[in-house]
Amino acid sequence: MTAWIPGNLLTTAMGVMPHTDVARALELAQSMDVPFWPQLPHFSYYEDMYVQASENFPGIVVDIEKRTVRFSMDKFIKELEEALARFDDPDFFDISPTYSDVYHRFLKLDLSDRPAIRGQLEGPISFGFYVLDQDKRPILFDDTVRSFMMDFMAKRLNVQLGHLKKMNPNAFLFVDEPGLQFVFSAMSGYTDQNAKAYLNEFFAIVDRPRGIHLCGNPDWEFLLDLDLDVLSLDVYTNAEVFSCYAASIQKFLNRGGLIVWGIVPTGYEAFQQEQIPSLIHRLENVWKILWSKGIDRELLINRSMLSPATCCLINPDRERTVERAFAAVKQMARQLKDAYRIAA
Image (cartoon, rainbow, N blue to C red):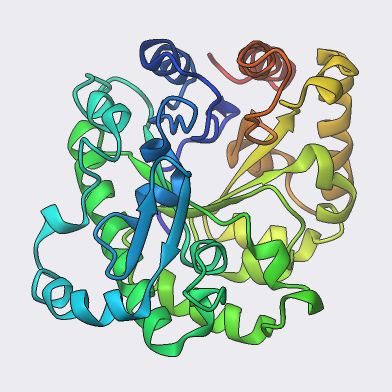
């Protein structure tokens, strides 16, 4: 693993935001220590994370008015040869201005003085479950489509990371995989052994630094054992479960891994119930459990960042709670840095 990734309780956030004002969203993203480019599906359906991942994918049918992404096998067969012919063309895998005006505005910013910057893309497992074919079957279940999809998504991530590294050499990516919790359940009809094998193969062809972000409760031992540099999670919801995996967390940290602790809720009701002291108490309870199980305190802090717990698009006050959550993350970081004597 690489050792460059900034920890020491620096702040960042997930990509999806409820804003319709691009300038405001970019301003908020830059207010974190590690800025990122926002995904704004309320601004445009093209800015939706699944739609952005689907650009140029053969067989995809996007309906902007109905806000749907579907797949046609007949269309896939017709378009596959041309897609394969362009597999060495970076432009083919980049996100175009049509599919993200926000991304291209972000690429024009000067962020060379930041400790790092971050990008993201929907992951292949979640994308493959979300997108249904003409028989309403997830495309992840089709061996031919899935194999192509893994290579396609890896290429798309690598092209994006290349652009970001030109802006800041410490750029890294989250692969957003909300579907992993579903995969690792008996309800999916899809074995977790298959998912694990495919993810191992996938990350082997994704450039470093690479990480996963997810909000659910998957197989933590498996994720911590993956050859990843970053794990971003909703610890606000999953604190009790995650703290049970001290041995795997120890191995992950020892390999140079970084944990992004999503501790501040962005949902309106949950946020209203919390204050900075209660959130710090909740996070430190997890840390204290891990320290009691042998994880070095200094190592854990050195390999930690802070973020909101989840994305949220449905609050009754629209952007306000999310913006307050961003501010709370920064306030928590300041207080924890003082407590653990980390230089600002």
